[in-house]
Image 1 (cartoon, rainbow, N blue to C red):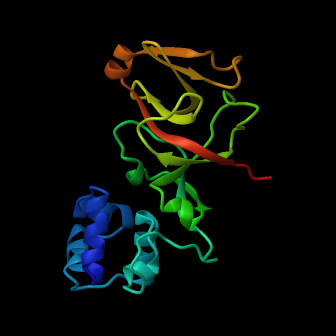
Image 2 (cartoon, rainbow, N blue to C red; image 1 turned 90 degrees about the vertical axis):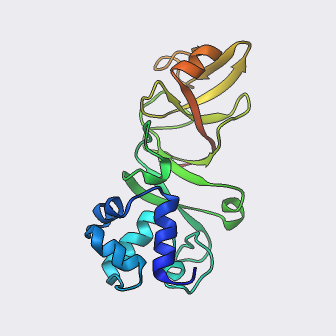
Image 3 (cartoon, one colour; image 1 turned 90 degrees about the horizontal axis):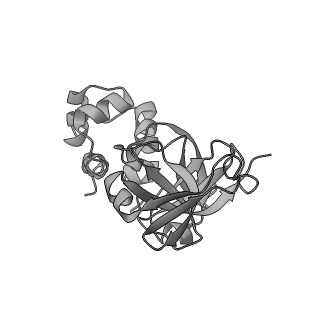
Length: 208
C-alpha cells in the first residue's frame, strides 16, 4: 500500500466515506476521487492539504515518505489531534466536520489509543473548566468512578461531566451545581435512552 491512491482509499474506508462523500468534503467530483484512487490523477497542493487535514494524516505519509499515519506537527515534537466544536449522535467522531483547530499531544500518549479534543461549552463545570477551554479526550466506552468523561445522553449533543457509578446506574455531576444538578440514570435508561460514554478527559488546556 505504497501508492497515494491506495493510501487515500484506505483513509476513506477507515472513515466510512463513499467516494462521493469524500469528494464533497474536499470539493472535487466523485469521478476525480476514483481517478485519485486508481493513480490516474494526482491532486494539486491545495487539495492534498485538504485531504491531509480531513484524515488528520501527514503529507509525508500521503506522499510515501513516512510509514505512519499519525500526523507529526511541524515542530516534530507532537502529534496533532482535531479540536471539535461539538459531538452529536449518529456521526462518528472522525467524521465530524466542525473542526475548530488542532492541539498537540506527545507521541508516547498518542501510541496508547485514539484521541480527540473538544471545546468546552457552558458553565456547568466551573471552576475547573471554563467555556472555551479545550479538553484532551481518549476514546473509550467506559470510565472509572470519579473520571471526567464525554457523555452522550438521549441522542443530544455530547456533554462533559464527572461520572460516578452507583447501585443500579450512574450519576453525572457538574462541578457547578447552580447550573447542572446531579443526574441519575438507571441501567435501564442507560440502555434505552441511551447514555453513552465516548471518552475520558485526560487533560484540559486554556488559552490566555
